[in-house]
Image (cartoon, rainbow, N blue to C red; front, side):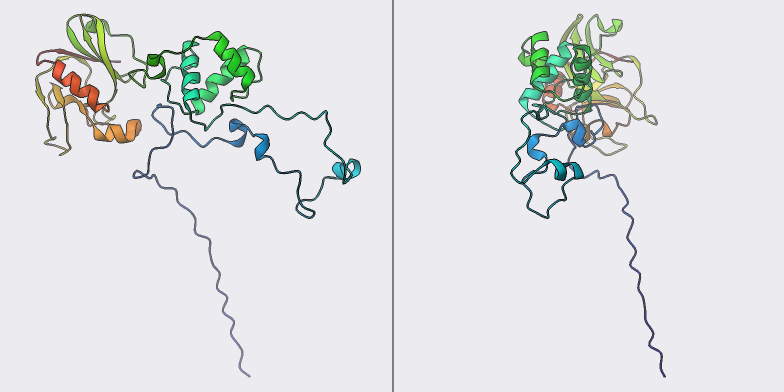
Length: 294
């Protein structure tokens, strides 16, 4: 008698490996240099429309013991039950109203980054702080009562407040920047301020070298300029390059424009606003001062 051989194949579940996707589009952030995580249901607030329907068909869900005792087929909801307060702005939302909210929170010194119109972790923290200081439930979401109090405590934002020249808040100029024509570059605030005799003419966001290829600090001068230049070491384009210390220069970076602070330079001062840098390139003369400081 022949035995039948039964072959059992066991299918394993492949473990998913999370890889950094450098080719994907940027996630929504509040311009802090890192992507914001997806908002949780509690952070975003749950609207009545997102709650499970109470008009389920028989068999869709089992009623709770308490419901089966007190409710009859013809019973209507208790008039004393009050719906939860629905937020008008919450984590994960994006709108011009949120841009106004952020500008008003900056007036209150509760936010330091520029308005983006996207409601992320920094906006949530700022709203919570306001609510805690003003006797409101600190949910981090903006309901009608919170919005009314924020409006009462602030003034209507100007166009510059809604869309300031830099995402990063410009640092106080280094004392060495207060005389003459200077590109005043702060590593702490990650901004470049073009100054003439102590007056700020224009500002822009900048990015620096990595730990292995740091941007030098100190007082320098623009040695030479090149509107179109390609790095002889890394073979990458360096448009509107203004060299101030050997091979280190202030220049436009397409990578900075695309990836923001997820990357770094090889020591140069990267600028992501090409239009602004083009104007600066025309204004800066060989010999003008460059100050790089913390």
